Amino acid sequence: MDVRRHDYQAEEVLRQRVQAEPSRPEGYTELGAWLMRAGRLAQAREALHAGLSRAGRTSGIQHLLGLILAGSGDYESAERHLARAADRSPTRFEFVRNLALVQGAAGRTAASVATLRQAVRLGGDAADLGWLLRIGERALAESGVRPERLPPQPPLRDAAIEQVVSRNPEVAEALAARRDDLSAEDGQMLRAARRALVRLLAQHPSYPDLYFGLSLVAEQLGEIDRAIEAAEKALAIHPRYAEVCLLAVRLYERKGKSQEAVERCRQVAELKPQWADVHLRLGDLLSGQGQTAEAAEAYRQALEVNGRCKEAQQRLDGLIHAAAGRGGNG
Image (tube, rainbow, N blue to C red; front, side, top):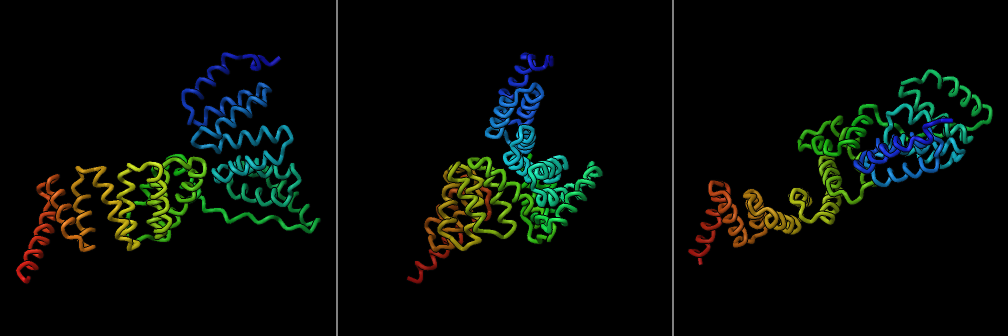
């Protein structure tokens, strides 16, 4: 008898780890693997499904759940979970390999051959896959069926960036640092980061930081409408997110929507009255709209926060002199 099936103390330790860190995916895979080895497959699936709804990065959970389902003969569900694992971690050789094997076991030879080719390109322990690939290709040739075409896979560097951003979304903000001379290589990296953020948002649609990162990346790619949409979604979730408000101001200015820019800048000034540069920015926006009295008040607010703000003083003086000139002409 396998004593692991009755080692409830070990199980309790694993469950406590999950409870202590509910967003840590490794806790669910460790518990799921332990339950699977103990032959308690239903409980293993239950633990992994809980991880899918709570953990941050779920590719490992999807992979293990796919293997359990494949072992029970549910190839359709297994393929679905394994495909998600491979999609979220496209450079993990074992994820792609196991997806190909399950596709083959399900009789989907064309799909299996296409995925096997992807696995072979990744390297790893791919030597044993050569004969499987040859068998699959021979079977397809004899049946006259063409292999399925997978979408073009991103270069390994881009796939690696996707993985890094999936684990640490704040990296996307660093990649989106503003620069005027965006190279083709920079664009590829940003698009890889964008793919990772979009996948994360599919799992966590209520995380404003993810929308903030997506907005920054979209702005750098020149996708201003998409950047505005992401910023506004972040603000709908977290209306007091001052940094996103400032980003929205910049985006609306780039679109020529001055009134929207003013409204968001007012919001930041209310949220962060101690930020002199925000009052200065508001003054510039209002001045550009011809609202000189309100612009002057914004410059005064900037000077109240920082009496050494030369730009605010110069622009306020300019408005005062312009108003005096108009009065003299009248």
